[in-house]
Image (cartoon, rainbow, N blue to C red; front, side):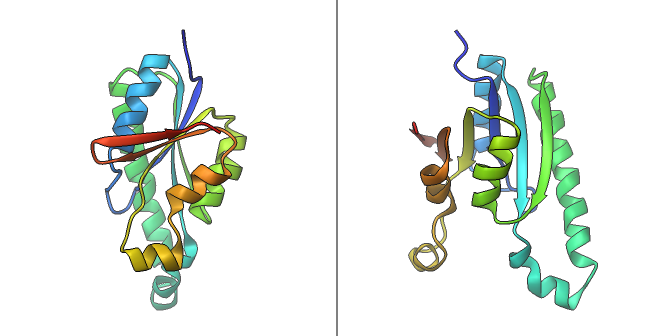
Length: 153
């Protein structure tokens, strides 16, 4: 019996770190014969300095991210997932994943890597994975290294 029909996985398309979220999403999508939406959300605020020093820099990074997303998409197809879509959005990652992408694609599971940083970073900036878990209307699976936790909402 299939548990999931549409899975949204948040990936990092510029720094190359996905905390095994992509691999976990492929495994679950294949087991459930589910559609897989591979999403990268660029936080434009994080690149404000780059835009001031090089107005074309942000667009160049977007192009690099699109190329990386294409690689993710091709890998998912190689793993036997037939319904795969890669999307790139610009905005606040937690809000975009939970509100915009989750609703737009009618997903029933979001898989993300645990966002860390130092304790000070987490206090000042917050933990994106925790924000996503709190605000999501569907199940969220957080993958960190070789472990994961699932929150049913």
